[in-house]
Length: 317
Image (cartoon, rainbow, N blue to C red; front, side, top):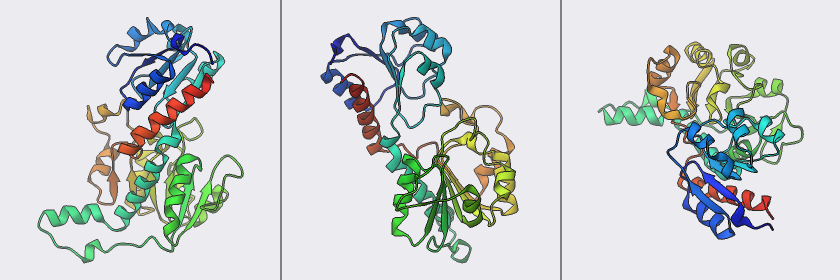
């Protein structure tokens, strides 16, 4: 192992303290900068060999060109969309993400959304708290006997399928990679999945191939009306087309942890005029919205940090 004290790591976001502590204990030199602008960071980035970031800003070609000594970029999250991966790899920079760290949280969240939608929990809760006791209009639907279709069968999809084992359901998965099916999900063609699915759950990254994938043409390929769960990436779904399908009854309800309109740092979502389709989602009783928190649990914060630490250390073993 090389002298790790000469490896300077710049932490650009606050994370679980174990990340800093374990890297320090392993011998790395840590520095933190949670406030500088991207340009200010670019002016000093050549002094660092690694960076740890969540979603503070994009790591683009300009940034990478100035990071002349960078050996790795570690993103404390599941995806690497905020990084120009191709260019970074052309500069021999190792890319680290941690989908293993929050996949359990995402699986539980997706299941929670389905059960909330099927049993009208959010709507019933709201009505009771406003003094209404409506039983018939809140009659639920049971998950048993349904077919669950999962698109994207990596860490997240597999975690969700595992959560479904206690239900008497058929679980199908579709993935661009062959032979990823397991005891929890049968891998099928997209056509077969669209033929049989009652509940569709997305567990795919945001790539040129998946951008705006769920549009009117895609939705209409499904033989049955279905429920949609999206804990993946907002831009995989065309919101206006989703709303049209909700209005027509082709989509029976939706649980959305991510939205097409999210900015890189999601807090600015409500600034300015809201798109009409988004406004519809805000008022629909058969839609549950959460603020990109499917993978955001007390446990996942620690697990994400631990996965990142382990992967950074393994680079230098």
